[in-house]
Amino acid sequence: MTSTISNTADPAIVELENARDTKAHHDPHAPDADEQKAESTPYRQDVFGNEEHAEVKYKTLEWWQCGLLMVAETISLGILSIPKAIAGLGVAPALVILLSMGLVASYTGYVIGQFKWRYPHVVSMADAGEVLMGRFGREVLFSGQMLFLIFLMASHILTFTVAMNTMTDHGTCSLVFGVVGLIVSLIFSLPRTMKNMSWLSLASFISIFCAVVIAMIAIGIQHPGGPVKATTETSLVTGFTSALNIILSYASHNAFFNMIAELKEPRDFPKALTLLQTIDISLYLVAGVVIYYYAGDDVKSPALGSVSPLVSKIAYGVALPTIILAGVINGHIACKSIYTRVFAGTDRMHKRDIMAVGSWIGIAVALWVVAWIIATAIPVFSTLLSLMTALFASWFSFSLPGAFWLFMNKGLWFSSPRKILLTCVNVFCFVIGVVMCGLGVYASGKAIHDDTGRASFSCANNA
Image 1 (cartoon, one colour):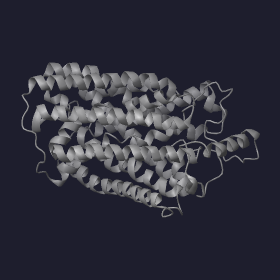
Image 2 (spheres, rainbow, N blue to C red):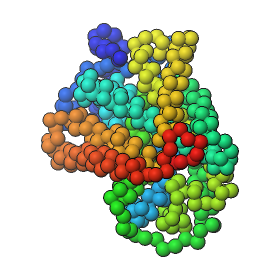
Image 3 (cartoon, rainbow, N blue to C red):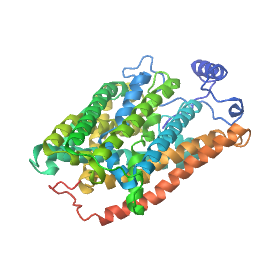
Image 4 (cartoon, rainbow, N blue to C red):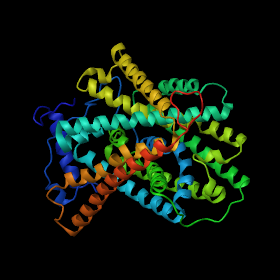
């Protein structure tokens, strides 16, 4: 648990506070004048503390490294579910959702950055929950974030199993491939700092970019293309599931606090966010429309099911790094969340002794085993994505950022025309998340109930 430190207890803290107050008058990212009147909390030190003489230093990320981590965590093989979502909605509604939710996700990401600047001790959703609702909020958001991260880890183990089954023509039991995915993911999760993970994220992005290009070229050659439907008739379940799969592609906000916490300069977060949103909106738009145009309404999810077996094997092989590493980043953040909760305020945070390293490895093993169990027990690709979106991403990516802004500006919601507009925008973001959660749970739950091909702990490929 993070400890509260009085401003008078340490001259370094006083100096930091003075510097922060000075920056507020000159920094273009600082809250404006009426925001300065809002109630603020006393300064608290983050869990990493002073790292000047630490063996393991966490706050070492450059903004572009943070951006690459965000790209790797956000963009994975799920991008190849977007063409199917476009087919389920029609081009016009799908493009509206793609572009509008991309802009909304950009704004809510920026609000998370603002919240971090206002409360420097916040390094996770759990810390943010404590600011909002005290101990209760901390426990609720800690549990929610951990569940979401573990489900994301499980999704990547499942996708790894699908890829290996495709590449080897079901060369062995799917359970074996799942265990292999677990072991490989565990090994890559062992670095304790984000900076060491950032180099893996570059390989992840190159991997998924090449896989998407291969899929687009192959589908363009193998399918003649057909009339593009601006709109299409759909049911509530199909339509909302399609919309959720598009929205999920932007839903990585749950990890933003953790990444900002390891930046050398947290004020550089907007640069990293711009890098992420420029890449993901562009790639989703191009890949989704091109693949749907050529593959038509029968496009599969993921779209690699719409190409020849040989090309599918090649594309899955090229995509393996991102299948593994995107899950690894989520696994790393899950491990870090527990590790910092256990060792915050102790010298174990920055040690490389047996206790520190052994604890990190033990936490990683436990979390990846749990993820493997979930992946094996619920082996459904698109419906699993929809369920995760409804239960978790709706709150972390939309409702909670809206609540963060309203909390930071409590008492100032109607103080100026600009504030009134921003209040409406953030209430809208909050409502988006609530609606997504309610309807999404219903739609994805019904889809899972109606899926007759599910099997738990089976050697067959059921994704």
